[in-house]
Length: 230
Ligand code: ATP
Image (cartoon, rainbow, N blue to C red):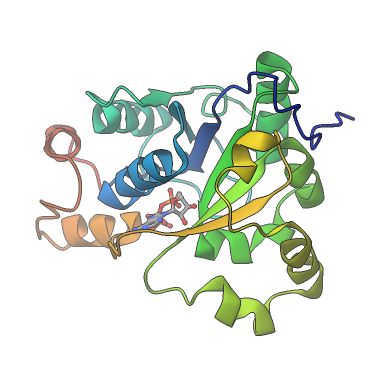
């Protein structure tokens, strides 16, 4: 097991954190992109990796084909020098477990590299259902973007599972610098611009013959239309 939550010496040059945003991206939309942009800027990150899930263990299977979700994610991030696309999960024949992805990234980046796993409030509240969820804290910081429509974590604390609330109480920090000072183990909450957009809503609009224009990048919408998706 890695021992990652070690505080770096003030003299050691700590690499700036890398953000990680996993999702089905079925399709990618401005909710995802603003989340990544605002967290990257707020935390001074040098990179955000978008990691489309292959076979997501927690939910129904995606509507678009694997290759199509990947292509839409690629089109969605084009032109943003902070954003990169990571294909390690999407072609896996087995379910995509975040803990395994983080273990992989750890091996590549080394123990000193701070990693920040991004997620919306809704995802954080369901964390204890994730495979080997406690290990996530050993491998990365968790940065929760306060997503519109979901009550703040403070208010949700009353209904939060006890194990998750205990972890939150132990790990919550209000200092973004803490995410650079250690490589894993903290939880940081950042409010983001309320964009009440979901991939479900976009798929439903398309199925109903309505246009989801202005909810997602034009290039992604063009791809959806060219390929007759959803
Ligand atoms: P679906 O509607 O198909 O469930 P989704 O729009 O919620 O999809 P996902 O790919 O499941 O998108 O989300 C990936 C991550 O992005 C999750 O952590 C989720 O909380 C977050 N997220 C998605 N949409 C938004 C949004 N509008 N604002 C903030 N975070 C979002």
